[in-house]
Length: 134
Image 1 (cartoon, helix red, strand yellow):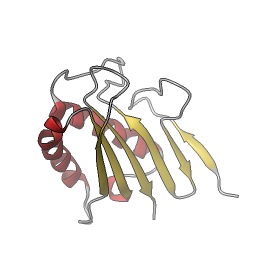
Image 2 (cartoon, helix red, strand yellow):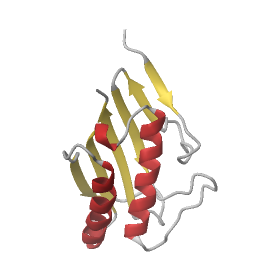
Image 3 (spheres, helix red, strand yellow):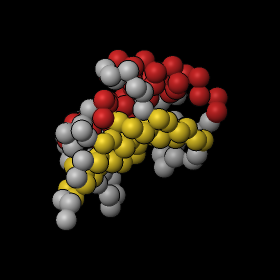
Image 4 (tube, helix red, strand yellow):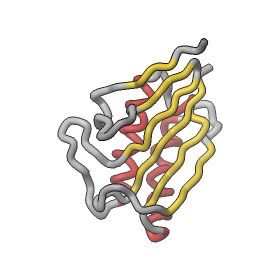
């Protein structure tokens, strides 16, 4: 039987409800949706600035990946949730800058982007990740 473990780190916001920051099963790491939250204070950052929110959100994703023994080199899929199409270009630019600085083997993760309503009004973006180790 493959070991299943909840991932926790103080370098990403604590899970606010009845879910884990992430889960590792064997060599698979799933990161729960992260937002633009300061892990130290729980404060939502960069109101109105989707590019800055993407950067903070991806830092939170990266912290949970690390808690599971993964990096962006292991990520095979990222899902991006935006509140409006109007933010797509700025999100895409910030996303590309962040991810391309971290992927060293040259194969960028697959990605899906959808427009949704998010749980907090100040959230313009939420991102989750799936990584496979080895």
